[in-house]
Amino acid sequence: MSVIDDDDVSLGDSEEKPEYTASKQDEIEPCSLTQDIIGQNLSLLCRTGDGLSHAFVRLDLHNRNLADIVILSSFVHLRFLDISSNYLTDLSPLATLTELLWLKADTNRVQSVQGQSLSQLPYLQWLSLMSNQLSDMEGLGGPALENLDLRGNTIQTVSGLDYDKLTNLVSLELRGNLLKTTDGIYLPNLRRLYLAQNKIKRLEGLDKLEHLTILHLRDNQLETLDGISASMKSLQYLNIRGNLVSSQDALESLMGVARTLRVLVLADNPLSQTDDYRLIVISRLPLLERLDKGHISLVEQVEAQERIREFQNFTEQEDH
Image (cartoon, rainbow, N blue to C red; front, side, top):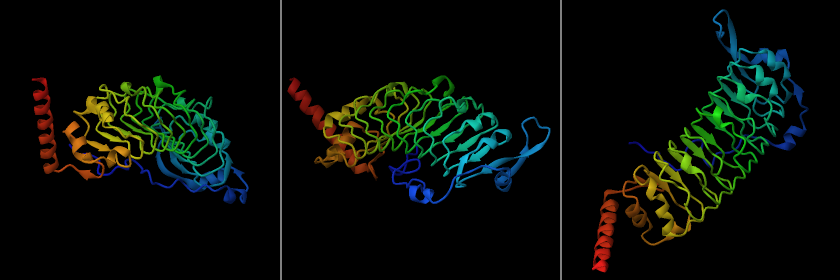
């Protein structure tokens, strides 16, 4: 089985956010979307959904200084739409675009999408609202949605998600928000969960994520790994780099996922400074293939097995 080759999965922890400077925007006056702007930026001619005609289905409005997109509501054949790096606060005109498959609305000024009917778009599979001003997740969803990117907002709790309409969601990106706990992520079909660069102190509610393969928790405030559950029977990759884990006892919380876990990133925790740190971890998790950035060697596996046997022999002698 292949495993991930570095600890910065998905789009990377060191990735820079899209350019967004207030001073630059203050120099440019926002404008409304016009027919002319749309006509200049349409592409990808395809047959319409009813099969009776053709229409352009891709529209790129990235960095157009737009403050409103009301006119878009009549372009019902659009399937791919980029409205990132504008001044938008209201996405409700998109509610009529029932053919949308892909929507990128990064780096705007959206504070909430509650009541804007985005969750009603029947075919929307990919949605990114990175670097907006969202403080909650109300109104986010969709029956076909597979990937949801909410990096760089101010979300404090995972609440308001319409779970009945998120049964197809496999990837949730919440890096760079203000979360203090993982509670509320009740998405049983989720495969990839990115929670780095929050303020998470507690792992809660993860037992419902039976299909999760990747859990990314880098740069939070975890002192223990309590909350990693045996019911997470698909977990292969766990990144808790840059937290506050100091005790070997934290490794006991990983015993329930020891059969599936293949990559563990523990660097930049106090525990990683312990003598024989790698052997301690490998002896607890013998099926690991990589610890931090280093693949586990055959020599390390043998040494870890010897350590296990020594411990078993010592325990047996104590019992007698």
